[in-house]
Length: 128
Image (cartoon, rainbow, N blue to C red):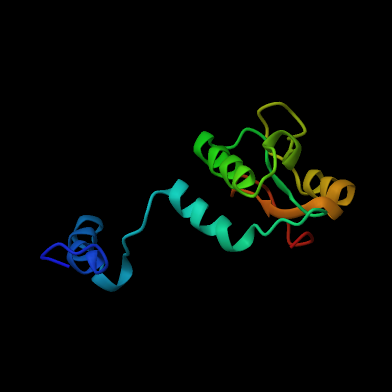
């Protein structure tokens, strides 16, 4: 309601966003922060059960990504220390490999409710 109602806010900000990035109004959108979007994405996809409650994610994620996952785990009544499984890179500070993910899923797959991986991998078409 009012002159700056929040529901149709994109109608008033999109033209400015488009001009800022040199795009058409139909090529941009207004969204939340990445962390808020991660929270919003976890809500419909993380549906833990007593047998499948773990989240598999990369080791050393962006801090707010880890916070979002931890808070979702807690919201469902689980403890992050026992509910989040980290994919570790072959070398410290390195990038995890396809086989690292596949091996970990083979090892703990029956307890995993969600796999959440960033774009930092080197996925091959054989895994996808």
